[in-house]
Length: 303
Image (cartoon, rainbow, N blue to C red; front, side, top):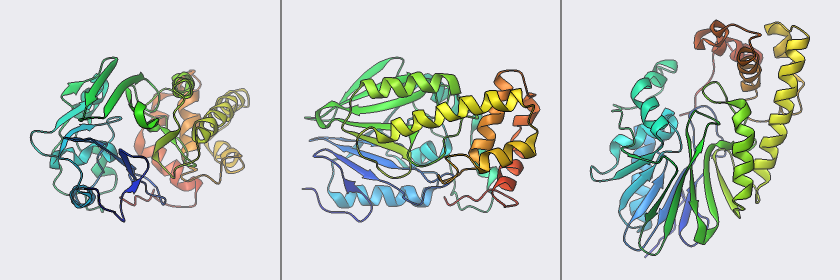
């Protein structure tokens, strides 16, 4: 029996979504795919407090036991909650996600030390998806697709063909500025086009609200068009940091959540083309510049 929830919203017969309309740094969306004899959780939240609520809400729904989980990428706001999953839970992810989880550990927590993260123990994926893997939940098949580089160096898509639902992780961030510091701006275009070719009726973003159909992907492609032309313009104009900040403040995407990320994205693109030095992308410097671009001394995390 499936009950109602104030946390999860039922999207289709087999899928549930917990979206955080407020969004923000480290506040991500969570998915649940429920089958007859098991369920699969898509991503886990950044804090153990929120992860405990996720587990409580899943139990309250009357869903099947969480026997599987899928991490769409390695960032802590999509993986830290793994450590509270049942011991027998099989966690899927790309090889790159496993590598980055082990390499980065809990470094994210040091960026916002005032956040109550909980006693996090890094638990990376152990079932690795090189190309595509199908997980059977009892009457429901879930396709896990290695999408390659985009938001990170190895992003995972979670597709439920029967329900025409795609969990896109941070490859799609509706009305929320993407962040390419750890990914690949150029590869992101082909990755988003690949998502369009899947023709899903519903696309669940890693952050931000649900949007009808593929609108979020189309808006993401529009942002990439702007970003790539802006990178070229910044290089041709030999823009300094202050000029980049002012340029982004007047962009057509300045009203999206976390607009400060555009400053970082332009610098990432300039660095990739040899117009900036790698030291310009050091977090201590980059975070201060992003914060200053929105009139703050530091970036705010709502995890």
